[in-house]
Image 1: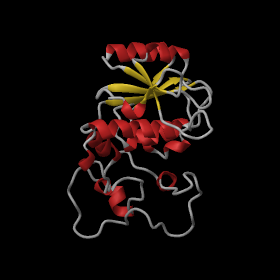
Image 2: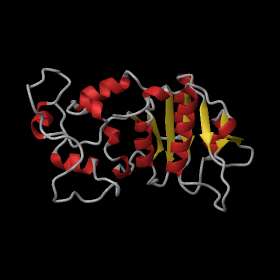
Image 3: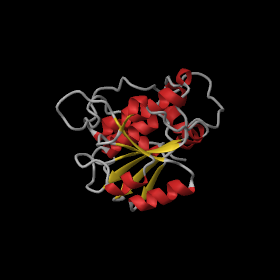
Image 4: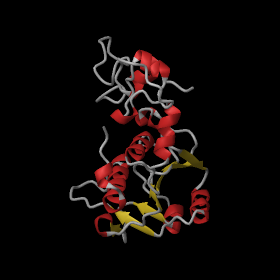
Amino acid sequence: MTTLSRVEQDTETAGPGDGAAASDEAPTHGVGPWEGAWPEDPRLDPELLREGDRRNVVDRYRYWRHEAIVVDLDERRHPFHVAIENWQHDLNIGSVVRTANAFLAQEVHIVGRRRWNRRGAMVTDRYQHVRHHPTADDLATWAAASSLPVIGIDNLPGSVPLETYELPRECVLVFGQESVGLTDEVREVAQATLAIAQYGSTRSINAGAAAAIAMHAWVRQHGDIAAGHGG
């Protein structure tokens, strides 16, 4: 049985600061111990029922075992994948994983360094499948074997506006790391490179923000919007 400790629950629900220390005051998020007749649903975790569930999960998953949540998510995952290059320990990866979980991506792929900063993921990597590829060529080989087109996201000369592009339902959205963008190796294997419309002075937006915009663009084209609200 996999159950979050109290420390892990506090970390997962740190709040607006996404890393703020847990307060000594009684938590106001989540739910307390189960009240009423003891439920017999095998998806529910006895420890969470006894102590309360303070995890950062939607209401439908309150008191559920971790494994049961993952099984349910796996039955509903969207057919798009997200990949991000990690050559210099990009701090945005945790944010990308968290957003991929929110939009129910099939998998997140880390290209380059295996280790990445999980702090920004806010424990959502426990629910999101993450795969590692040592090089861009390895990612390209995997995508080709899976019949998944690679779609790069970067504001480069010749890029097509994301806002007007019809994204494939099954695809891999690839993001370069902060400051340097997509590597040449990814650009060479990408079916298309898409740019997010910008109107200010900066050349590019934060990689985590770009990933969120691109994933939401996929959801607008292919997702079941009516089923997309948590609670």
